[in-house]
Every structure is written in structure tokens, then in C-alpha cells.
Image (cartoon, rainbow, N blue to C red; front, side, top):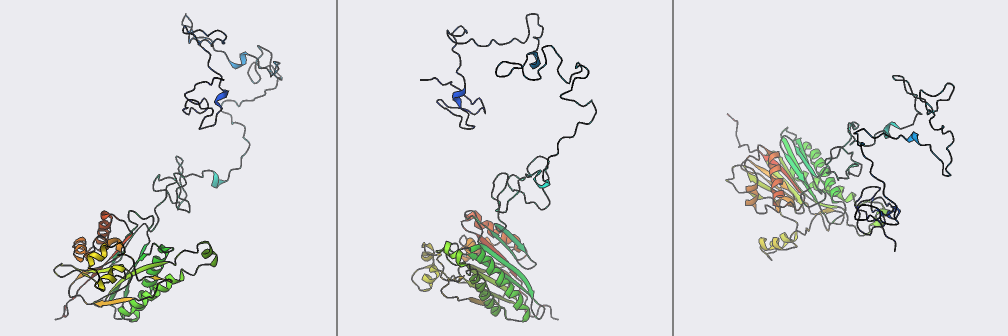
Length: 449
């Protein structure tokens, strides 16, 4: 049996080796090509039958004089047969190109004089765009508008949302969204356990025919078990918001406008199901896109809410002396059990079927039943419009009242941020979206003489 040299590291790439390796696992170097180490006797001499090892050259002789250096040109080169190479000078003859070269002898390797320009090298065509394909090289400046990685802060982000340098997946634009208008604010977050945000919201302000302001907040929650729920929620929120922004200035009653907005949102979601037949062939078991919707309009001293599904709206008075009220009723299995008197609310929501929704927007909805309601609060407060990503952590109205900051009417964006933080601190198991709409109460006759 042949003996293999016992190496601790690959002679080619220095990768650590293990006993018995025939090839380097990193570079594939053939370890059998490494000559075996000569056997050495205990006194340091080579064993019988083995070639002697090369002696270690001293750095200096006994007189402390440096050992003379030997240059490669001191020994003549030979070919494989032992003959002189073509053009090899005789031993002792000066090398070509040196000052000792005789007159008339060709200078095979001309060198420029000190300070003289070097001969131009052959041009190599390199496209300008390919000269520095990476933006993480030291000193490299990315082109204007280049999106850089949030992890390594130097690699470019490809169209699929991954860093070309470190491969880190970039946050999607909808992972965390915030918007603030003069009279309303909203925050939406992906949460801590979902890989994307399937919620969406739309805020807008309009003017009624008499010039008084109207504020609109729409919040939608994509149904995760359906296809493209993020697209459904986005389409529904935009369609409902645009419908109200167009109808309110025309004098349409806010409650009627909310009803029409929900129908418009349903049409927008239904349109997403009209996909090419080829796409349906590849995924025949996919459900049509679907989402829930809840919205609020504050206009002319009225508070109007509309909803389909299990997203909710709460009324929270500023002074907290009045009751906090939930303004919507869920389209869900738990709500049906409570309404039928079959279970208490605590029992129903403790059941694993509690959040199974019975109403939604989508082409496969059983029957669309938009719910709308109007209120006329007798004091100032805020309307909290939210998905179940929040109210799962503040289900009782008392819990929601405690979670809403006392200055919510004056700082709606800050309050929406606090409520999203409340959900994340509670576990953040779902996407969470919250809109806070202040309701300013003006007493009858205020300002009159």
C-alpha cells in the first residue's frame, strides 16, 4: 500500500486538511502528487536508501560576511534535452539590453530612460458601463438614483429586491408606511411574523359644497388565503378613497358616498380576478384576490363609517369621561355566534374559528353587503380605523381606550405610531394598519353674539 504524505494544509490554497484526504476540498488539488517526506533518523540524518535533505543555507558565514547571492542569470538555461536555449548568451557574456551590450547588438527588451514616457500599451476596449460594475469598491461612486443595500450600504439593489453585493433582501416599500395630512394620519407595518405587508390605506381631504372640510380614511386588509391579497387591498383602498373624494364635493351625503365607495372598491378587487387563461392553467387552485375594508368620513358634524369584513372603527372621546365605542360589527364566525346567542363574546373569540370572515371584497364573495352607519358625537374625540392586527391586542373597548394616547386629537400621526407599536410589542403576529381621524366638536351657537 502506497503511503500518502500527511499534510495539515493544502500546498496550493492552504486549506486545512483531514487525515486520509486524497484531494483538497477547496481547490481540488491532487494530494497524491505531493512527494513523500524523506525518512529522517533520530540524529537528523537521512535514513538509508532515502535522498539526503537539502542543508539549510546560513544567512552569513563564520566571518559574519553576507553569503553571496546567486542570480538566475548565473546558470545557463537549458531545454528538456539539456541543450542551450536559442538566443542564450555564452556564460559570462552581458545580457541583452544592459549597458555592457556591444555596439550593434540588438536590445531585445528596450527600457525607457528615466523621465521618458513609456511606450503606449495596446488599447483594450472596455465599455464605460462595465468599468466598475460594483458600487462597493473603495472610492466607487454609484450613479445618481441608484438604490443601495440597507445592510452593507454599498451594494446595488437588483430589480428583484436583493443586494448584488451581499444578497440581503431589501425592505419592500409597503413594509412600513406613514402618511399625515392636516386632519388625519395613518401608519401601516408588516408586523413581526409576516414576510410582506398585505394591508393598505388611503387618506384624503375634500370640501363639501358649502366649503366645510371633509376627511376620509380607508383601511383595507388583504385576505392571506387568497391570491395576491396585497394587490387587492391596495386596489380597494385607492378606489374607495377616489370615489369619496369625487362624490363629497358634489353634495352626495357622506353615508351614501361611503356605500358607493365600497361598491367601487369591490369592482376594483373583482377586476383583479380577470387574469389570462394561461395563468389560471398554471395555478388552477388559486382563489380570487380578496380583502376587507373599513372607512370613516368626518364631515359637517357627522361621523360616517362603512365596512365589509372584520376590520374595525372605534370612537374614543378626548376627555375619556364618555364611553369608548366600537362602531362596527365584524363579518366573522365569532360575531355570528354571539349575535345568535350561541356563545358569549369571550367564548366565541377564544375559539379557533373566531377570525373566519363571512364577508369580504372579491370575485368569490358569497354576497356583497356593504355596512354603513352615521353618528353625531356630542363631544370632541378621535376615530381609530384599524385592521385586526391592532384590535387583536386591544379587543375590548376599554383596552383600546387605554392604548390611545390622551393627545391623539392634537397628534394623530404620533398616536397612530403608538398604536402600531402597541401591536408590535404584543407580538406583531399580523400586519397592522391604523388611521387616526380627529373629530372636532363645535357646540351649537358657538361664536354667536
